[in-house]
Structure formats: structure tokens, C-alpha cells
Image 1 (cartoon, rainbow, N blue to C red):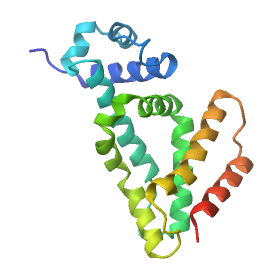
Image 2: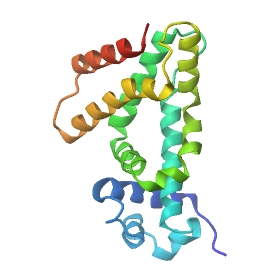
Image 3: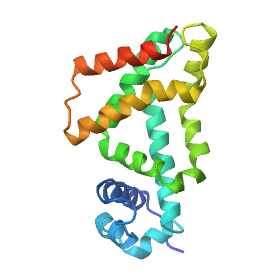
Image 4: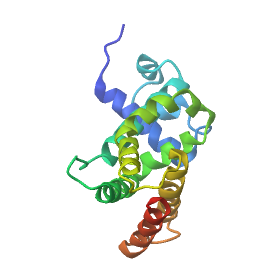
Length: 189
């Protein structure tokens, strides 16, 4: 059995994320990933059973990373409104700074592969769900289903970020602030 090297696994994951974000799932073969990671194709199979397993593990890894970043700075002494703004800003920052990882998650989320790992990946957003529940119990947020809450707060932000990354718009502080106010008004009492 070959010894596993965390640096090689990271290189494989990073190469796969970059290639898939640029070319899509169908045009990203294991041999292309191996070449971009500077490893042999056989090396990939030391870490991952197949391409599907590789993609699922990467998606889970990136969602864990994203969940951690969204919750950065949250604490018990921060109001619901301040916490919501912090999460919203953290998401914007993550998606624009880590735009290739963001693009990968967007592609994966719209593929049939997501069904096999959606539940696990959502556990990484527990602090966000707890914030929504806290906002409901403190009567700060409207009593709406979580799916609607997310659709009216983060889906518009995701759309704006995609336009910003593609160069269609410049998402400056003023535009971002206006979008935030609309999102807040959609869910706040």
C-alpha cells in the first residue's frame, strides 16, 4: 500500500477545483486533474475511489471551509442584526476572495452529485441556522421557513457575486450596502 501524502491530496483537490470551475465536470478528466496536480493518474486513486468520490469529498471540504468563514466573528454578545450583517459580509468576502472555490460549489450544487452529500455539507452551516432561530425567537426575523429566508437573503447575493466575478457589474460598497438593506428588509420584522 502506498503512503498517503497530505500535500499530494491537497494538490489533487486544488487542481480539480480549478479545472472544474474553468471547464465543468464533463471536460475535467482524472488524467487532466493528475497532470495539473503534478501527480500520476494512479496517485489519485490512492486518495479517492473514483471521480465521483473525489468530487463529493471536495464539495464537503469546501462547504466546511465556507461554513467556518461565514461564522467567523459570531459570538453570544452580538445582536441578531449585527450577526446577520457579519454573516452576509463574510459570505461576500469568501465568495469573492475564493471565487474559484465558490464557482466549484455553484457547479456542484446544480449537479445530481449533490444529493449524496447535501445533508452532511449543511451541518457546517449550523451557526447560521442557529442565528435564524435566535432571530425568530427574539422576534427580529419574520416567522418564515428557512428555505425562504435563504432564498431572499443569500440567493440575490449569490447572483450579484456571480455578476461581479464575471465582470458584468462592479459590486462596490454602495451597491453591496443597497443589496444588504433589501435582504434585511425581506426577513426582518
